[in-house]
Amino acid sequence: MKIEIWSDIMCPWCYIGKRRLETALARFEHRDQVEVVWRSFELRPDQPRTPGPTLGEMMQHRLGLQPGSAVGLFAEIERLAQEEGLHIELTGVQPVNSFDAQRLVHLAADHGLASQMKERLFRGYLGEQRNVADPDVLLELALDVGLDPVAVKATLDGDAYAADVRGDEELGARRGVTGVPGFFINGGQVSSGVPSTQALLQHLIQAR
Image (spheres, rainbow, N blue to C red):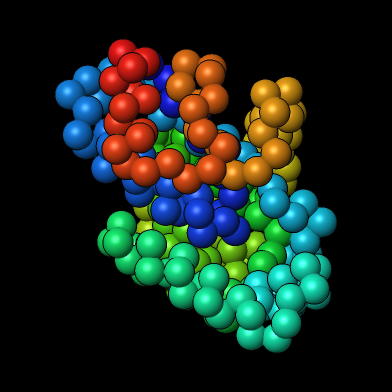
């Protein structure tokens, strides 16, 4: 059984969805027969690598929200994350370009560490408010999950895995992925949002 998840490190819902999937898999008796593939998706492909406005400020500008109106939404997301055992602080988060972080996930996948790399990137950005577009930060986070520093530096200094990221995005577009997270089991979409742990478990059982 193959599970594919389109997600972006910038997305707190993707972090919550990741943890719910992991909990569902832990309860699934055939989990040793499941392959999990993390697919790339960029919510803001034109976002610069240098941190600028906070997420709240961007939402205020782009969506026409009143100052401070994102606070309630952020609090709800943080509460849901906490229910999954996650620590998220959205108030000071500054969106950046996630392309290089996505490339690192592909590098990690070649070493069986994609899930660990996604986890560290999510925690670094959403929990620690790190700049996950900064090569030095990315190197540090990659070393935390056990990747070889020489391979990481070579990847970040060049364009390795760029085609893989673009390929994921093109495949997602063909499958109708317009937002994240997007969960697919054996090629069929089961959710375009964040399903509950129980819903994910039921999809696994039905697919089995």
